[in-house]
Length: 280
Image 1 (cartoon, rainbow, N blue to C red):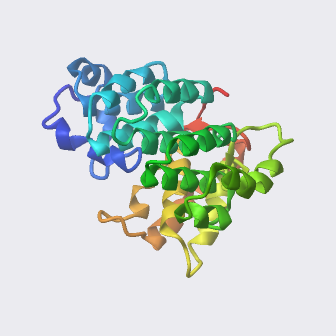
Image 2: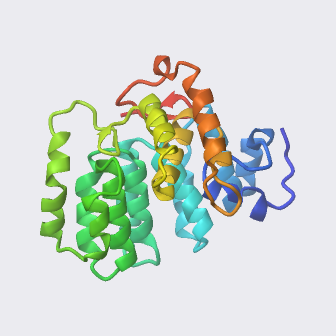
């Protein structure tokens, strides 16, 4: 492991897009040394490393990091880590903490992302409440609807298409009600794209989508984050450095994963971070 960070300002910025570095191995760094520096990116990187071993005990250290910065990439990386590795109880608590300053720049937008990353049906009602509080922010309302679509629709259908309509809250509730009712009697709270969260099933669905001419980059990117966070496999090559989808690389990654019999390790309705079950 390395104690020396040449320039943490750029070393770890790939974490704003996922959970791996494009041209480096994050595991060569010592998380304790990173945490001792107290520097923003080093803390994000350290908590990424700890989470890979199933240690989620220090995620709260991200809260003051985020509240003290207006760096959008730090927020992207921090909210992804909190949302995809935190339990629902933690996410709900963090949401309440951030929403003590609801008018701070970007807070409502990032709270929508946090709730969506939870892959939890309990997030739906909180997202609706956030939508109601965001009448002055088109960006936040747009993102709330995108997150509702990611949770409740298997592709960009009626919920997603309503993002530019500035619907009253009551109309949005009516729009999503049929999708919500589908999950009303299910035991698991973990959902994604209108179904119980199932990591092997998600990988198979992604693979099928990549053969469609009308594949939607944004939905593939979100599915990639869900898959990468849950399994720990490096999905960075699915997109090139300027964000374009690389279908062949993506299909190869998914084929390799599906060939490992993932159903023996990843069970429907359970959230994971790098293969470690996240507390319900």
